[in-house]
Image 1 (tube, helix red, strand yellow):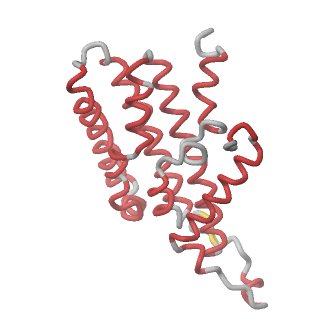
Image 2 (cartoon, one colour; image 1 turned 135 degrees about the vertical axis):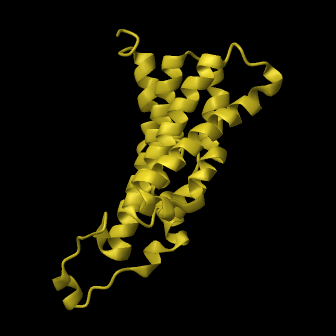
Length: 210
């Protein structure tokens, strides 16, 4: 219990939500962020899938790290990640088929996500199972939070809905309001992410380059 409540453990779990955010600070996983955030539901599910895959891949690799010859460590990482991605993909097809169609090939591309491979190589190979699992959860949630914000903004302003429910009243449309079609195009995702990066670095002066 003391291990779970230690400052080091909290830093591992919560750091990626702020000053070590994989998207806003490390600029990793941006491609999927631009592609799947036109709808909030798809954004949430992508965030959940990445969190699950990164957390359990970290855990399994950490458990096996002392048994893996250095020459084949990348192959082992890929096998573990591929197995988890396949499992998540099949579960989505079985229980959330419509979302799976929205996410399309990006579920499979979790395998090549820089966040996943970076955490396996940089953290799980050198740390214990508990720390590695928490690191995976933290980085997955850091990724998911950004996807949630971007998906929220793009769906609300681009379609007037959230999770498929009408949010902007019909009376607004009656007086001339129009959804901003530009919000659902890929360039707008890049602009929203850029604004979030700017806000993040404005609030944390130590992240600014000298």
